[in-house]
Length: 442
Image (tube, rainbow, N blue to C red):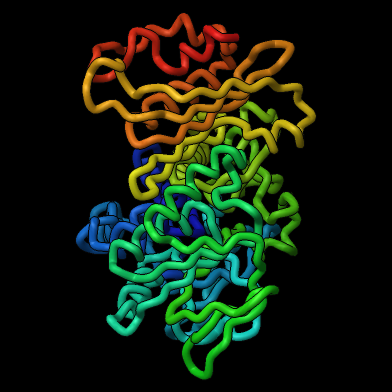
């Protein structure tokens, strides 16, 4: 059996390793357009500011390892141009030699990931304007962050924008963040986002809200960002306005995709075309709370979907159970965690919902060192089933978000939180966990 995988990062190499474990006689060809395999993209902001010492530290396995230890035909600098679904062949080009390639497959995995969104703004090709997605992006950015760079502008207030705002500030740069909407981190509700705004201002991050970028000004290198209201002088720009599935090569294949270009897959990671699978940032994910296909590209999901795709391709039937939309990020002294639905999403789905909010101590009030947790829970007004949770604080956000994520996965009601046997000792919790305290009020 000849397996071909497009994409050599999270989903692609998780699938490849699962195929190796499942099918001892597998022939595996991986086509990667970049130069690097199997690295942790989520660690890149921490390489930029030196918290993680080297780019090598975020690489799980090298290209050489896949070739020599696992005997894969692991190619680099290979740009796929189209897929012949009738004859089951992948076609492309070696971007170094410019030679065309053609690789037949018995089973194909599309794990091509996503690309940073770069609008066609005037001046976007000027030097000093960067995106952050790959090891080479990170290397180029770090090389460009010389002592001459005093003012850094970030366009976009999502997770990458927030993480990089902290990273640049750690390096001693003056940081401006421009967000088109009226809040950063729009996956949080506005009342919770205010806490993020306060933390940004506390750390001297200049937030520019409600302005839309129109162009970049400069002769050879960027000198200013022009918005619909004014211009902001800068020495360096990071575009962090989101990502889009890297699926443009599929437009003539008949593979079903959603409006954003993410490939529709079933629970076994199969696409609408026989013998073609997909996983990771370029594929959809079933959302358990929404009960529909969604697209929330995260490294955790990519690795899970990749493993399941590889198992199914090699004949071991496994199913992907879905996501609940859990994510977490560090922003200076705060941890921002969320899972399930926000108010905006609940409204879009026309779900009747109720809200509980509270400020609680991270552990027993009489034990020193506690920090305030700001917690917001959404639950179905009629059934009391949990719909979502958002928690922001300095300490122990992660363990509460993981409890809520588990509760959402199991479709628990807010009342059933009271039945959970959660760990308690004064240095770690109160006798009633803050989430349980909220449940008692309903």
